[in-house]
Length: 339
Image (cartoon, rainbow, N blue to C red; front, side, top):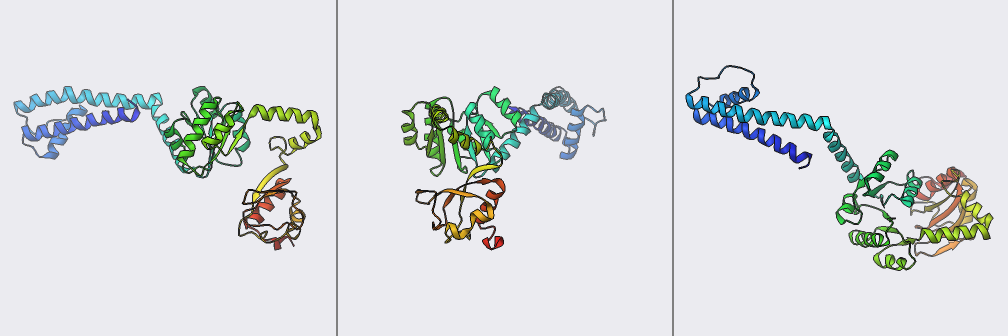
């Protein structure tokens, strides 16, 4: 039995004995319920108080039975509660309750399935940007996650109930980076059925698995080995390009960053051209590309490019400039503040 079941059984037995004792004195001696209950309490507690009323022979026999049965049960309850507190089971239970409360509070978060070499790096990179929860079943890996202070759930990500517990219906996206391609396909299929609007990013070690993941519902599929090979080839063929890419990678440089910023319908940028917006002047940010709502990607947009609501700007700049652009794009600040 788990902690809750054991404590429930113990207290249920104690309540049962109290009821039996109260009803026994009520029926045998004809006392009122309060006197019967009080006599039961002082008998079980063995405090040595005198009898409430003189007992008949049947009442004394019942008292003997109550002492042997009731005191034994009361001692069992006391022992179990003490053992629970001392052994830390109560703390563990309360810890799980706190964890469940945090999971229930998650909204628009990401679910990271697997905390291996790839999952570990993903979590460290996105930790300051987006909320996420890790699903991992290896107890040894769980200890490492606890040290990092990340939110997690111990369980098998291929199980539908586990995904429901981490709020897949409220999640923004899911990243499946388990070592097994078969597990990643199964997780993708399950996740897509539970949340059709979910963004799913999956890992594929074998090239032929990419098509299966796409059919299962993955929005994006990444092959770590293929990316690694391309990166190494790029270092050989285009070293300067590689140096630039490393410069704008978050873990390499905290100042210069690549960011994507969505333009809301409340933004002053809507209906203005790139030149009219003065983005470069007030933020120092360079717009490398614009992804339109239709999915079309406009690389190196010209000065006369007209911004529309829903456009996603692929911008390069320092953190301060990017923050200013985000505020204008969201509608929090007006362009007139900078002119």
